Amino acid sequence: MQIGPGERERALAAALGRRSIVLVGMMGAGKSAVGKRLGQRLGLEFRDADTEIELAAKKSIPEIFASDGEPFFRDKERRVIARLLQDCEPQVLATGGGAYMNEETRELIRTRAVSIWLKADFDVLMRRVRRKPTRPLLQTADPEATLRGLIDKRYPVYAQADVTVLSRDVAHEMVLDDVLAALEDYLKAEAR
Image (cartoon, rainbow, N blue to C red):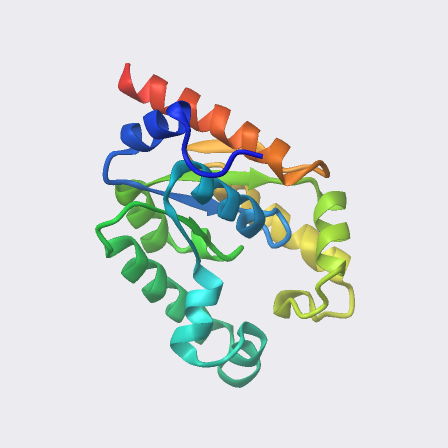
């Protein structure tokens, strides 16, 4: 397994210039798992917006939802992502599933980053999120219907991302290779 940037990865990082890479998509799409590996491959720092929110709030995401509610969480999320993207150094940033739904956040990502949507089918997401029963938005009587509703609402917005890559049940390295290839295609097209 390759760690750190090779020639291809150095060229990709150079083509990004001062921009970061922001991963968007549903909970369970693999943004954190793929993001960590992408950061390693490109020689960029990896950050997880949810982790940064928890550090800033000194509470877990489920605790924030329980004590302060979703609107408070979404405002905190917007502010934390804005702070992370104001940093000068390019990075790989994994965002929470709802972050890209905020118009202000989408605009900031558009100007300071290349956005990559990790798109996953319902069945893949459901299998993955069942392993982590602490997801606040799925604490409902019918988590499957809730997830389908979120997909219906969010996928048209996620489709505005610069790049779309299918996240499927294969090794993270295979999805990472797809991300690198799609990013390379996007940056080459942009250069033309």
